[in-house]
Length: 117
Length: 110
Image (cartoon, rainbow over all chains, first blue to last red; front, side, top):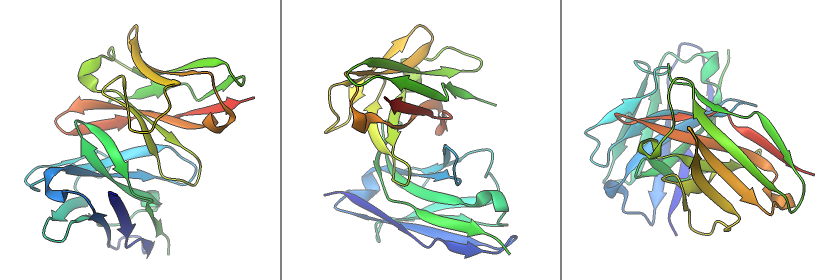
């Protein structure tokens, strides 16, 4: 069964950096674009970023452009999201998702990032 | 800035039918936006219900259906059940790799 498992969340300092990961299993990982979607506490879902299957194309929401970097290692079946210059408003559950034909086909359970001093 | 609009909340009686909508602040929604719908129970990961306007994801009951109604995408629940009480989100694909979520609709079944 296809599965996505996020990790790497935790407490980050304002202005600091954090990297979250998403491990894929039972999935032809390199064949699919992958995305990050976040959800601040008590708020709705927000698309953050998408990366093509090869990793050659990346896309970002305006709200994170310049601070977030999406990447992938197809040899490890793993997706990453680097968050720089952490802000309080980055506090959220970060979900990774498999992208198929412009929709989110499979979701992980998420990892919580908390930004606080 | 693209804004995707959804009703903040909706109520339906058990066994009843409800239609949730998904609009664009400055344009009409059509199939080129590949409307998709997701169900999320608080505290859980989202679940994919509908993609490409009207295709049900694997395992989704056929009481859920998607369509374009007028200038909006729509999710209809026919014969609502107690377990359908949840938050529902639509997503529109805006091209160039950009997807935008609506604010979500909280559906109450009572």
